[in-house]
Amino acid sequence: MAGSRLEKFGTVFTRVRDLMRSGVIKLSEKPIWYDVYKAFPPKRTPLYVKPHTRPSTKKQETVPEIFYREDEVRVKFYEQYGPGPWPLDLFKSNFVSTCQRFVDKYSELKSQRKLDDSALFEETGKALLAEGIVLRRRGAPTVSGEPKDPVLGLKLTDMLAQQQSDSADSDKTVEHTPHTQTP
Image 1 (cartoon, helix red, strand yellow):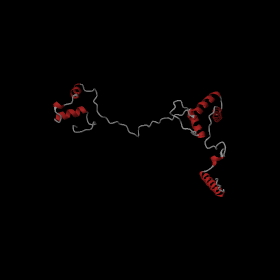
Image 2 (cartoon, rainbow, N blue to C red):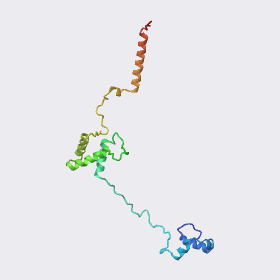
Image 3 (cartoon, rainbow, N blue to C red):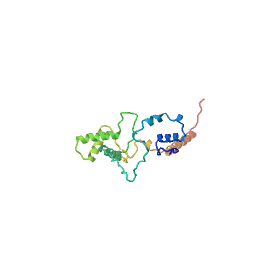
Image 4 (cartoon, rainbow, N blue to C red):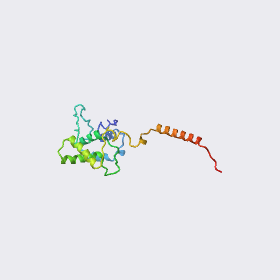
């Protein structure tokens, strides 16, 4: 037992005691705490006891999922409108996301009116639009199918071809114009 370095076999006190009995530790080199521990031993011996539990018999505790009514509204909001064009600004402590504004307005309208969920969802979107918050449905086309400015519809290759043809035309006109010299 004295040669074992595992705390599972005996206590530190019994191991030091046995080392002193065998002469490995001299009485002059005994630890400071030895006399105190010998005079005032603990009420119960501090032995290492291996826990006697089997993993198969231990019942696994399942944490119940917590869903709030607001979470259901958020899920429906993100399914219908997506995350939005702007990222969340976490530098501003008073920043309120579009989704949170939607949930707040939804709760406000639900307390005022007795509508079913889908109608209330649509009314919330209309109320936010009246406040100036534009919600774009996910996958919906833009307001108009054609670009408003024809310049926005041009491709880079078309622009380069147009520029080259314009420069070629300007070179031809320079060649055909007579040069007159003034005295």
